[in-house]
Amino acid sequence: MTLSASLGFENRFVDLLPGDKESKNFCRQVFDACYSKVKPTPVADPKVVAYSQEVVELLDLPESWITGKEAAETLGGNRLMPGMDPYAMCYGGHQFGNWAGQLGDGRAINLGERVNSHGQRWVLQLKGSGVTPYSRHADGLAVLRSSVREFLCSEAMYHLGVPTTRALSLVLTGDQVTRDMFYDGNPEREPGAIACRVAPSFVRFGNFEIFAARQDTATLRKLMDFTIREYFPHLVATSKMQADLLSAETYLRWFDEVCRRTAEMVVHWMRVGFVHGVMNTDNMSILGLTIDYGPYGWLEDYDPTWTPNTTDASGRRYCYGQQPQIAMWNCAQLANAIWPVVQREDSLRESLKNYSETFETGWQTMMAGKLGLRKFDVGVDESLVEELLKLLNAIETDMTLFYRQLASLPVESNLDRNRSSEATDTDGELDSMVSHFSVAFYDQRQISISFKSQMGQWFQKYRDRILRDGTDDATRQSTMNRVNPIYVLRNYLAQQAIDKSERGDHSMIYELLDVLRNPYQIQENREIFAEKRPEWARNRAGCSMLSCSS
Ligand code: AMP
Ligand code: MG
Image 1 (cartoon, protein in one colour):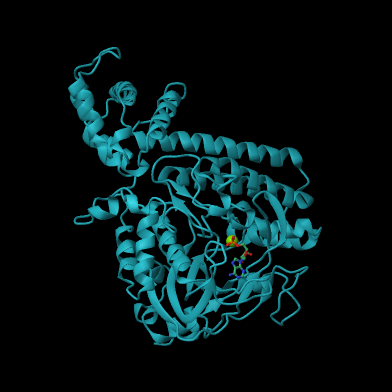
Image 2: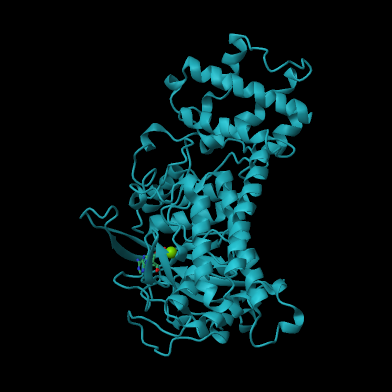
């Protein structure tokens, strides 16, 4: 079926903000403009190889459309639907801590906004649909492996309850793309693909930074006003909705909310063991969404210094444990960027402090949830958490499996004994408790006597703490299992789906998509998706090491 104009698209970003006067598509510096209009480059033979049912519904698109020819042509970039006015955004960014100048949508093209029946606006964006004025020296394309990763992770994160951009579809273009995956002089031809991402907005911290860097305060302010009015309308008094410019107080409330949302997002990352891998300021969403799934990874054995990104291997700037600090550093760059309009240093600093506080209390509540505590008791639970994280790091322990096993560890049977902390377990009890966690240990030989005894001490403390709460085992297990996923997009699982897909079998993409729909619930006959990383995947490219090449 053909979608009629009444089911068409709008384009507020284009209608309300200044655009590039140049209409030809060549690489250049773009000034005084938030975007450049540019059409996707046609592809040879587009095929939708996967789509998200939930996003189809979110966009009020008929099921018959997504499976039809019009969808393949549109989502592959060969045709436009009524109302689409495609554009690439102009932004800059700090990459690995250094100002990198103009970056922009080098291979992303926004098609337009779909307004659904609830009045929500969703931007559809193609990633990998050809060069734009921001492509610099690159080709504007994307390969299948990175597009599968983006597609699956976007939806997996959504179902985990993590703020994220969404993914509507994965299209094979029928073209080949050349990539040197590890930048080691071995380029190969790979299948080209395009993911269609969906979000209320793809505006990043870098969209503001570029205007501040160029001292273009007028455009900076226009973008700030647009962003607040469109995406943070609750911050604007109705009487000011029509006013030309917003007040300093509104900008400050907005910055405060961006900091808060960013902190909350990172708390979720830490909860589920997600490592973004490239937290440059151009990859930070102004809405506090996880954005740009590149060389991301999932923590397997708990190691705060782990980074999936080979480019980051030496500095580990973006490793798991650094994410909270880096997000705050990024918020500080945003503060610098909006300063020319706001000019209130103290208030901006206050919001950065609020970031820390939001993160700290969010982290505490999150850890209490992971442990099945009613509430984080500051002063008591800090050491409980700290000691646990030391234990998890002492021997290779799968973080995801550990918390699920902790949830099913019987504690109640010990409650009525009301033992004192000094009481010691018998060796038998200690062994059976440790072996309860064996599915989470990568190398049983690492379990030393001293490790066992430390674990025993920790569990004694944990039991006493649960005893104090008076939570029964069944309740504890069910509440813990609501925040500790059993299924995450393990790096090697994504790679297996990619390997198959590259051979023409796309079934595992759907299988993973389906498993990850219910990440907190044990699913029958799907045990293999909840296993720890197999040994063969330990050092395999794509499974534990990823580059930015995509
Ligand atoms: P990323 O590291 O993926 O966030 O990308 C950083 C910048 O490089 C962004 O401006 C991207 O649009 C751009 N970029 C990445 N890959 C390509 C590509 N294949 N073609 C054009 N631009 C790209
Ligand atoms: Mg990016």
